Amino acid sequence: MQLLPINTGNLKLDGGAMFGVVPKVIWGKSYPSDENNLCNWSMRCLLIVDGERKILIDCGIGNKQPEKFLSNYYLNGDDTLEKSLAMHGYTVDDITDVILTHLHFDHAGGAVRWNADRTDYEVTFKNATYHTSRQQWEWATSPNNREKASFLKENILPIKEKGRLELFDGDTELFPNVSVRIFNGHTDGQVIPFISYQGKTVVFMADLLPSAAHIPLPWVMSYDTRPLITLKEKEVFMLEAAQNGYILFLEHDLYSECCTVEATEKGVRLKERFSLLPE
Image (cartoon, rainbow, N blue to C red; front, side, top):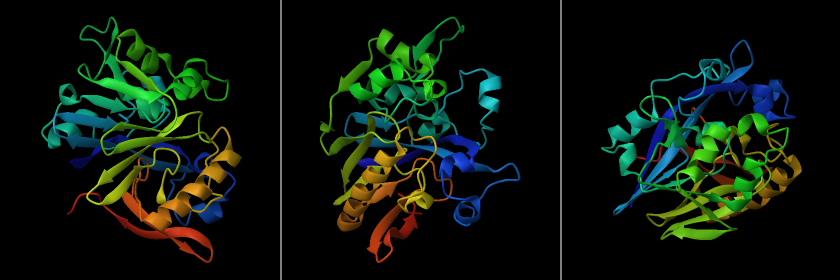
């Protein structure tokens, strides 16, 4: 098995929204922002290569939304999904499976693209089955007013219309050495993959832990629909991660690709930051 980080570009989001009730005078010491209080965040996906199976976890924002929409997020960086796959010798047609942790536009937008003459949508990964939780699918396709702007129907509905969708219920093993667990604080039915890799467990953190700066328990995003549930989920998970030496793969942290944590007198705290692949 190989694990390959797939960078799809960066976006900027308001620091206050990303750090919730934590004041900027505190979070600003851990994560930088610009003069408009915007922080730069990666959209880092993960490719699992296991024999004939090529499993991609999340797929970035894509490029089919109108420029007006995309300009709100100040997209930046030279990376794209296609370029990053090509760096490792793959194309979108090589992907056999896509795990969508949840269906917010910055995680699932790349799942669907325009066809050649821009008259219809098509799935980006034509040979892949798309997997997500039934709970998240139902939540996203009948969105609440708070999350509606993050669930874009053109990112979601074509997957089912083209017959590429497979839903699962609850915690399960999707593939050998790849299991998933459900977390509900950020959005209902968020999927967190756990990968057994070289004697370690690598956890794709999605929006349960957007960055290493979010490790302290109260550092919860304002985007989370149920922040008190996130708080409880983090408390249980972070202690488990410290006890078991999990490698936490960070989707949104521009400055840290992976980290580990440890238990201290002040609670679970950052232990090490590092890249997944050797330099």
